[in-house]
Length: 154
Ligand code: DQA
Image (cartoon, rainbow, N blue to C red; front, top):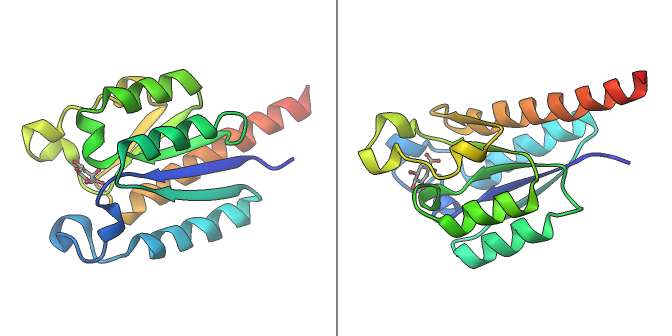
């Protein structure tokens, strides 16, 4: 059975490529996802993408990932900074996740420097534009496949 990674994007990320290009770059979310799909396929890992502008929809998706996805990459966008509900959902499902941001949130406004999700994330990658997602995917694949090799060796 293949491992599966679910990539979750929060509000306003559907506007990538049009939105504040000097901060978020010119690539669309579709273009970023296309690259991730190629990378995942090369590693033999299944990948699914989900974007929503609604907190409840993001929470429902996190819940439904239980028993379905082995790892999450999540850019919760503005919700990162204040959604206790998304924090609770991630804690509840206990699926390991990497927090992703296109911009360097730690170098921006003070309200972006606080993440509710970082303390429960496996790791965080930010500031590299679309490359942040690729680096996070690479890490998640290595972690999953590395675990698999350990299991095979046992
Ligand atoms: C973001 C950073 C957030 O502060 C912001 O609200 C976003 C995008 C990023 O990817 O850089 O919408 O998560």
